Length: 315
Image 1 (cartoon, rainbow, N blue to C red):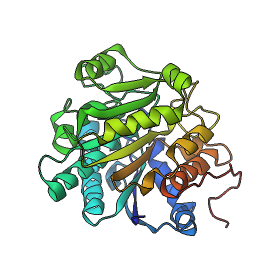
Image 2 (spheres, rainbow, N blue to C red):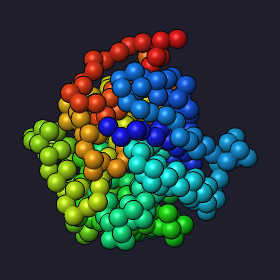
Image 3 (cartoon, rainbow, N blue to C red):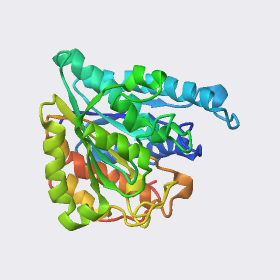
């Protein structure tokens, strides 16, 4: 198992609410790295990328200012993930709102091209209730966390495209668990030929079978693939610490089984878990879900029971 670089991406400006900023620092304080090391994973915090100091308590801003803030945050994140890949480590990014996918995968894709040549391609498996594939012309909210998928495919604001534009080819992207979206973003992805597994299909086939297909898509002709997990893709009962709760979601136990040992693959080049809001959590249930997802991913044959303790490590 490669050593893991934990990277906090404490972004809230990309969402309609700022509370996601607190997710990564809280996971660090709760002992995430220590729990991974207890399981035999060499894991350390490489970086905690926080909002610029003068903007931490700033009130609501106009879209163009938010765009600049999100772009600068993602630029720093891209540098961090590229550095981890360049050192032979596995970047594990903890968000933050899902606009951080621009920096996470823009940095990973850039590092792959640097290491393996300009034609090295990145695949991506995207677990989410939403498609996050709006542009400024189609979004009803103007929130950048709903634009990151489009950016990675090469569509969106120039400031974002400079960081993560065309990081992923359409034929190497697979969405899983989709059930809340707008017509315009769906039309873009269908036009590009992106595979979308809606929740009704997933329930018919099962997560394990869908994952088999997704890995084929993400690895066909690529130099490596990543996994991004938006916690609002889960049933709210399993992940109450999120902002956008959508019923009929992924379930904890099925996801742990589907992801088990995936991190042992040498072509897995990055992991991202986003949209955790500690203030909305219940008995740290979502925090425990995050650690269990990572333990399932990064250790062979390890699926852990639910815990209901106040900390990830004993105080």
